[in-house]
Length: 137
Image (cartoon, rainbow, N blue to C red; front, side):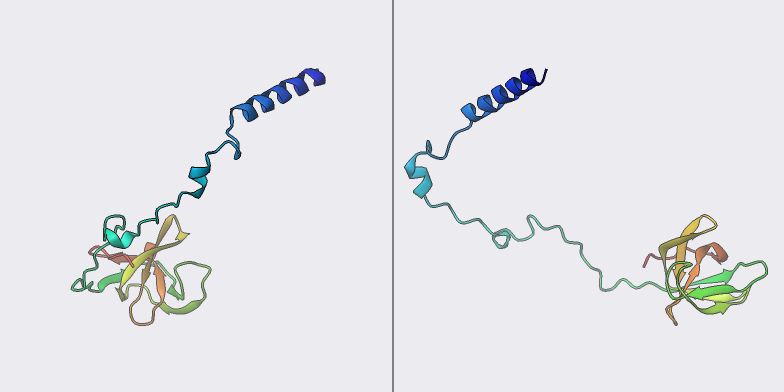
């Protein structure tokens, strides 16, 4: 069994090497022929590069939201997740200004977090009710 496997493997190796061209068989003119220099992307501006146009006049306005906790205060965190430290809080039924929304750790099935514009803190979107759409960060 092992002898048959070795013979088959040796036969396959010899067959592959027989069909591959060797370096000695290459013509001498191909080895000395200079290769053309590669073309740069600068010759064709914008052909290969897909750029997104930035709108300088686009301005997002903050959105007002209301804290919708039942009993406790709403924690303001330093980042969009429960693993970030608490930097402040907002009381229930108070208005908060929301700058934008981003993804973070999930709070009761909701992975969205709102960034507050003034102090740069984040609050869980699960506990803030807004009347209009909030732009993405």
